[in-house]
Amino acid sequence: MNSNNVPKRRRRSSSLVYAEPPESLEHINDQAINPNLNSQWVNAKGAWVIHFVLIALLKILFNIIPNISQEMSWTLTNITYMCGSFLMFHWVRGVPFEFNAGAYDNLNMWEQIDSGDQYTPAKKFLLSVPIVLFLVSTHYTHYDLVYFMINFLATVAVVLPKLPALHRMRIAFFNPDPEEER
Image (cartoon, rainbow, N blue to C red; front, side, top):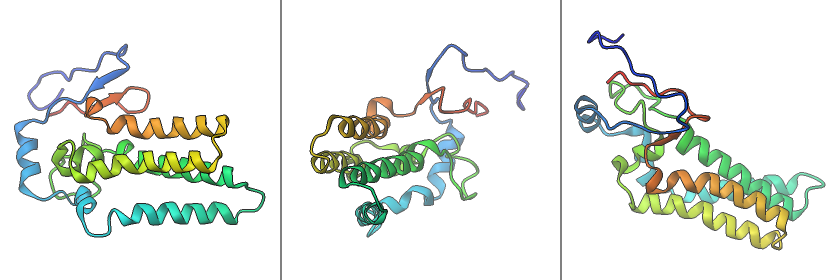
């Protein structure tokens, strides 16, 4: 039971997908008081360049490993970037800094960027990078079906959570029970 002596409601166990409930007035006020340092860096100078630098460094890293073909190198670059992107933007929830009284605890970084607004320049860029990397890796793997499917599945796993239709949606297999104490 929470402080209001009202029992917490649990999410139905048969539901595989659930929507994160809207923020309470207290959380909205907490979010408006201080800037969100967790997601502000996305709009800073050089934040977009780092994605291309990381992709280039991953490609160089996989190129220097012996006995790895160019096709495998591009596929590993794609998968590594996609896994890192998914982990950073969609898996981890909350803010590592304690400055906002837990106002962002139930939101992942993608939902925190630009206060959750859709179709901002930063979100358009972050959506386009995995797609462009997929197209480049598909070209350099010479459209081989196996590499194509691996790259395609990795890209879909990262692009789908970024779509506005899935904003604040959670899949039960990958996320713990939501916090309902609001």
